[in-house]
Image 1 (cartoon, rainbow, N blue to C red):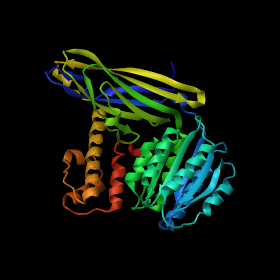
Image 2: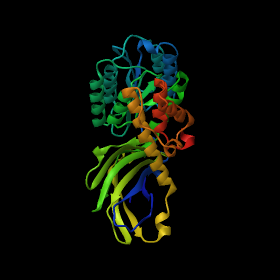
Image 3: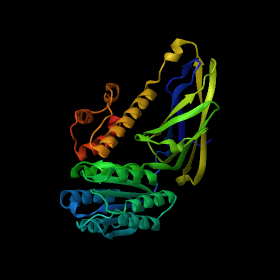
Image 4: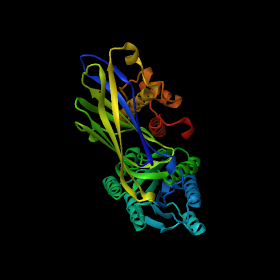
Length: 410
């Protein structure tokens, strides 16, 4: 049996009471590379796409160029790199090439100057073209796209390009710097391509740290094309599926069907599990132990030329009339459920505020207690009818999706 990945599950409650009605069960399923993959380092195929519009002038553009140069220094000679800059036009700063001539590549980055407006689709299209030149299923193929503003007249084109990237096995990782970028669009681009939602660079000085994280994430990939399927037994109905690690993402109704939930996990990174929390409705059952689902994971290991590897794990739950058994709770699973709920409700508040300039949703102390002080204060201000800044909106959204991360990883 392959040993590259582990597939584990935990229940919010190992035993449910015997009742006459349906009950909710929380199931946490986790996939992670094993120690066998600790030394794996896949080649990187990076395109870095940078907004060089006039609003990037000064500290923002200088900090970003420094961060890109730091990333280039860390790349292996066998990695490939391309750099694209865009305003209302596009410039191939560094055509796709092996990252061997680091001084020359960095000098080209240093020569980037600020320009005019913002047409992001031009940068995305050029970046994808550069990535295709060295695309390989045995490489980590990623675009990092950074912007500080709103693109004009081409949002649909940006979304279409993100769809194209995802179909071609290229993930996009958006970065927003400052307070004026379009988080709805950048988040959507990341999701549609199979990457992550946008990372927030609040101050120019944060760029080095964020780009370092981006490099470390890509260099840690050991397993690709991971897909999690939850096959449900009769009498089990899926209500929700939420990815809770590496960050919280509500997967929405599109992944749910009557007897199956399908979740694309994509790349699995060493030392970074991917975890999905399922909320299931279970029909009444007599006392006993029942299989409620089978978790199935499929994945590729490019460095070992393995495709379509598969793991399966039964998920069973007990029904009991013993109060001691039915009151026992898995604190870790329920903590994930609590934080996923907080993320959902805070997201609802932010969406309402962005749409109407006010909020009617009130969060209970049981929800707000898992939030940091800045977020609590901002929500209290909104409840009092006060305005909060665009920067605060972005910061709250970014931090709330990271509620489940370990403190040392934040």
